[in-house]
Image (cartoon, rainbow, N blue to C red; front, side, top):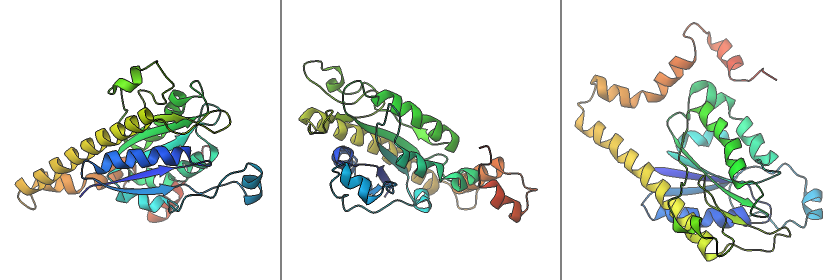
Length: 248
């Protein structure tokens, strides 16, 4: 059974609420889902001054677990129109996976939370896409696939890039029913794509004789990506250096 990781950062619970609806949509397709949150970088003193509630009982994601997922949905609250430092710090720590092409070919999606309708639910997605491109992740946008995105009779979070919610400047607004339905629909669509791809790969493996060229091509996908990215002449000692980005 394919598995999708939902990885989010949430201070006041808004993104966590969206994640729950996305999770339900993915599970409706028969795909296994695991929830994770990124590590907090703010101190407890700062969080208390922000009147932040306790974090949800969800495990902290580590980069080594990313390779286990067939698809990853990122729940990203917006900070000045871009992703918050906590999510950026986690993504910046994945260079060892990037150097091996370990995430290449996996599916990725995004969902959001902003204080208001113009807070950056689209620009936040655009700041995440370069990360997907560098890792070779296959970005799956929501698209205008749901009638709620055309609704102007009330405030509805989300965009073509992914579902979302509007929290209000004081954080008092909760997810509306339409936002929950939109998040469920995104999860369902994402789950269908991951499931269909997984079934296709399994079908190829079953129909291809063991040891054939085609079978090996399916099984050795990540190894091929790695060999094309790293020179065979690099010694094992040099590879460790290549796992770090020295461009800064």
